Image (cartoon, rainbow, N blue to C red; front, side):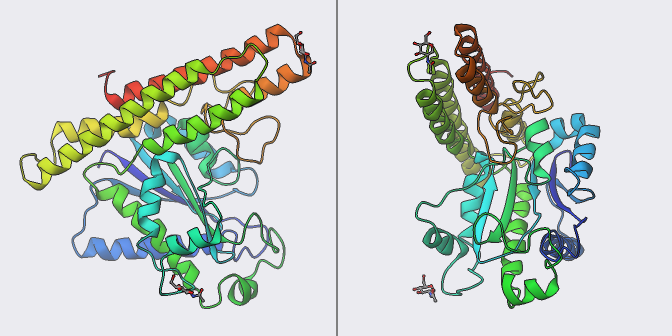
Length: 370
Ligand SMILES: *[C@@H]1O[C@H](CO)[C@@H](O)[C@H](O)[C@H]1NC(C)=O
Ligand SMILES: *[C@@H]1O[C@H](CO)[C@@H](O)[C@H](O)[C@H]1NC(C)=O
């Protein structure tokens, strides 16, 4: 196919690396084997599936970043999604991260997979029980090989870990070995199976479904929440968030329109009024795929030009925590310390840039550009 679903995991490790990265590598090898069994039975995915084994992740995401930079044009025109696994298992609770159009697919998937620690419930049930307010994390940090895909090119992505919370005791140490994994991280190795299952089901649906399973409604909810934070942080200044709210409203309209188009097409497909190769399906898929790209900007974020994504990227304040609107965040930090009217105008400028990107995404999604 002309469209790619990309699965990736790194293979370099600090020492033994039983959890980091080999718990993920085990999942990747397992999936490659299962997909090849399916292929021998005659399965041909609608879209091409690419497996990537990265080197030098621990040295600063070097392998994946080089590959993404070298293939930027190809990825920008053809990549549907990038599904990352790094450390896949260090504990019992799912800690998922996605770009928001993949939220719905993730939730549907974890409702299908059995909780590895309790066969009378699903991973979804245990995830909800383990969290007072279950939250999907975002991908604005430099935590693993998804960074270049999301933050440099704007490719919808996911990352999956079974853990306890942030961090785990043997991280990057000599004790991250098979004994620790077998005794503590996953006695019985059922969590490994669950991680591979979630990863594999998401890949299969992204590769095979006539219409790419993206839902942009969740994106609008997220953007609204981030904008409320900006509004609060800029209270009493000249900064106005209305441009951003307006563009989010447009995105919501576009997402609603696309979701009803999807339903129409699905109905016509099931009643055989429409062929699987219809240009209408192709057009809708291109819009779903390209909408994320619209969040990127050629000039990149404030003071950090390599990072092109205006919603998710590292803020200069903190390179590790997940940040949203990193350009706005850094402009606010600068304005706070100087408190000049020019510096607050720069914040407004950043707000406008994000608002334009969101407006562009809604134009791409609704098809008003084509
Ligand atoms: C297993 O899941 C079931 C159904 O959700 C629940 O009633 C039960 O308490 C769980 N068992 C344990 C040991 O958590
Ligand atoms: C920033 O500048 C404005 C206007 O000059 C002033 O009203 C405000 O008190 C200043 N804030 C701080 C934290 O210095």
